[in-house]
Image (cartoon, rainbow, N blue to C red):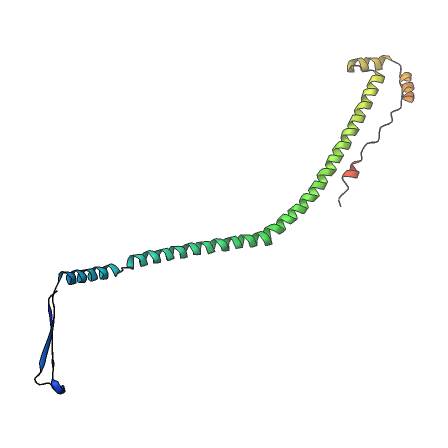
Length: 180
């Protein structure tokens, strides 16, 4: 920095002619140079370039807005799925559930029928076994030969002695009513 000289003229009595001259001179000293250098360094230090941060901030905001838009789309999709589920799918499920209840009742009836048929078949099988034991189990050829040789009147007599009384078995109309 160069030395500065300031001069001013002052007139006695307020006029501008003649008078005294004052002069102030600031000399460059090492401390003033250092101070001015320090001041300029601080000025440079305090200058902030925010353009890079501003760009990053704007990009972050743009990215957040994009994610927010995607989130809103996802919420709308979930809301639509929920609406579909509540107003369309749930009533269909309720209808199917009532159909399943009717099907379960039919399955229970069929299980009951199978149990009764199984008991009746066991009873019939027992009677067949008793009849075979009483009549004697012959082979087919032996039966044919004996029926040709033996007199017919003894067969009539045996029929009168051993009459077959069929057991009461299930009636299908009890389980499968006629549909009109």
